Image 1 (cartoon, helix red, strand yellow):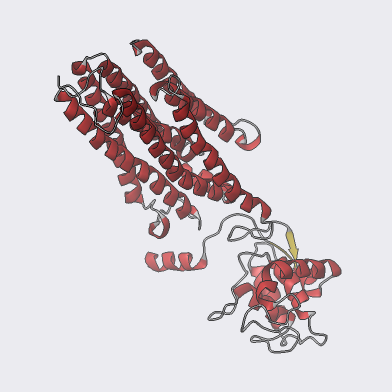
Image 2 (image 1 turned 90 degrees about the horizontal axis):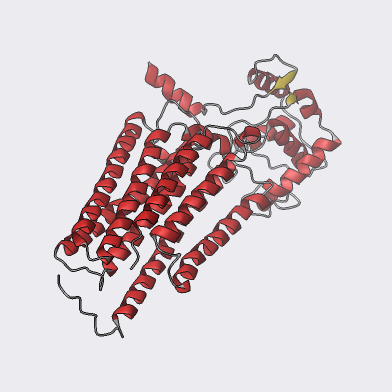
Length: 210
Length: 249
């Protein structure tokens, strides 16, 4: 197990940990506002075209969406375990949990792939690309623009999370983390929980209006 | 250091259960037209979110600093949502574009004859929709090129039906947009009456125009001529229908 050296510009390991965490929480604020902007657009257009939203949302598969929600919740708990085990110097178990988290994330993307490919196939596409014949409403493209933007941006975050956690796992395998130093695991975890949090709101707003 | 395994498992079960509850409650209608469903769904989502924030993200045991930082983002989001949404609430005149809107019975004879009520409605709508370009007194002093209604310089004629048509379809190639989708038929007649009142000596329609419009408006409904009823509900835009018909050939 390698001993972590606190960078010279920090007073102590505790201060390094605290400031790193604050930095991440500030980043999460920017993420909330990023997705928040899309939620605002959703709120405005849903306020203007409530029936259209109702009809368009019924084109989404709420069971696939629900399954994805369960998948992300499971990935969050395995992540929590990974951090916990790292803090208790059990990197072997932590690595297993990190791996499981990444696998769950991959499951999410696979389910997403099936959802998207079906929509592309039938013409449920954003904006001007919309050509679905089962729902002819002049404003329906707006719902699907929002759907693809919001779930797409979220999906990118899931993908990025997979890379980040993969990197954390790599470092953990090299023995870099212990009860003395586990900051990257914790921060990676907090980011991952945010991804879960955003989906917790996306799911009912997009899938469950129908 | 405490082992949090049991706590995490409890939170996990709670999240799974609440997800199932969210999906099941979406199948039931709470309140008339399910008007409380959104509130319930958002409430459950917030409970789930709080569990994730407090326990998985460790905010419960964390310093005040991080909590304040994170929750401040929701405060700013609230301002963002609130101010943007309030714009919708104060705009009475601007309506979302719908293809057809009216459901009341439409009396074409009443629309053609006009009335004090109709004139007042026209005046109100003119102030909201037209004055910005045509000026508050219809002198065309809003934007360059806008028609001056106090003199006779009509592009398509100054009779009631002619003006009604110009309002409906707009004048392609100019800044005059069509209001066919934004205003109902009765509203457009109201504006037409008001617009013609700017000139004390209004022009008349060409012979046959009145009968033609009566026939055209009657064709738009399933009931016969006389009282023309406009149905509610989304309809296929004409270009879309034409496209589809051509595809079917």
